[in-house]
Length: 301
Image (cartoon, one colour):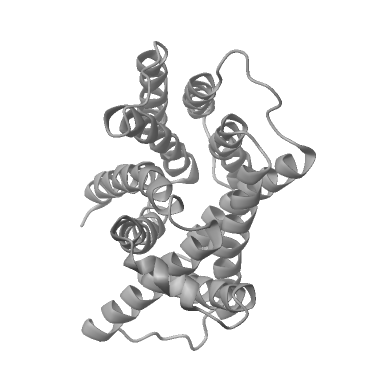
């Protein structure tokens, strides 16, 4: 497949990834109605681990690790999902939804500068401006008048940690793209995530896992955790590990803001949440920013 077709496929993968993650919010709310966050995370990563091993078995996939930077691969799994999910969950706990959304929306901007420093990728002025346009759309869409305190100090610290971990993951995954396939990166990430959260659940339930298992009898929880474990974890992270291998950081990072659009539209259409007059103009800003970053690359090619 030539570079032009690979770029198109990678962009399509990025859009699909953000659509899956945007809808994940709906399923997370569904699951959290029956279980606490720790139980949700344990089952999410357990299902992801089982699915990845099933794929590995059916596909007869063998890993060739000799001579490769395995320590970096293990670091990748530590950063994402362990550090990122811990920071994000505690950040959300101690912050408002608005503050959390704004902080995550800043990740493309952080990545633009980090890519220049660590990966020596060149970023055009137009790409920076279009990224800012997209981020501005997310911020305006997230902020509502009359809000109280946006975040506590711990909340701000944890959300900053989530942004840093998310950015570090993208940079490291791109750096490892030549040595490891998207499946290898995804497999090691969720194997580490499964082992970590399995230990956490054992400690939390003090070895008595009846409570954790009983929640699977709730149909809505089972449906939600299957979506989160199979599509939002294995599927979406595989797609992300794929497209970061072929798109520049500037091109790939800005797609993250599309998940906000999907989440808000899903909330309106599925959860019957109120429609805001700023939804349409902010959506246009976000999408225009994403398209602009992609076209800015072409104009400099």
